Length: 171
Image (cartoon, rainbow, N blue to C red; front, side, top):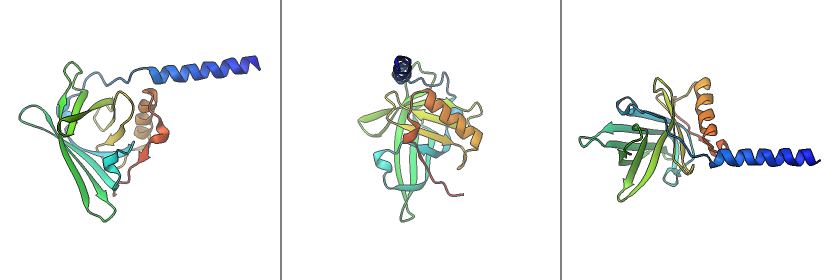
């Protein structure tokens, strides 16, 4: 019984240390390769996504001042689209992998690329306090092996996969 109790305490301590480890962004993000349209495969739904039922995308472009334009779009239940636009700036010294995104000035939020396919086919995006998580793909559906790899990265970074909600995308 004593051994079981020690084992349970050790497992709990290991889990706590994993969760306490800071979230890490990828070392380097080629911003030009990252630009374009991404399909949301799964996410921790944000408050402004509560009316979204399907077809959620994020489109990134380069602005003249070097910042990134952001356009998030989703289909609502009535078939119409909801859209929000914003701007993001790269956090200096992060290899372009950490950005600050603002949809409503003067408020901004961290946007960290924490996992990335070498060919930029999928990405895992989160924030340092693990409140937000997105798994994105260049295509509406993510192949099973890529889905497993993206989920593994999120889990290794201490994100709770039980909170992930799959996003419906039209074929």
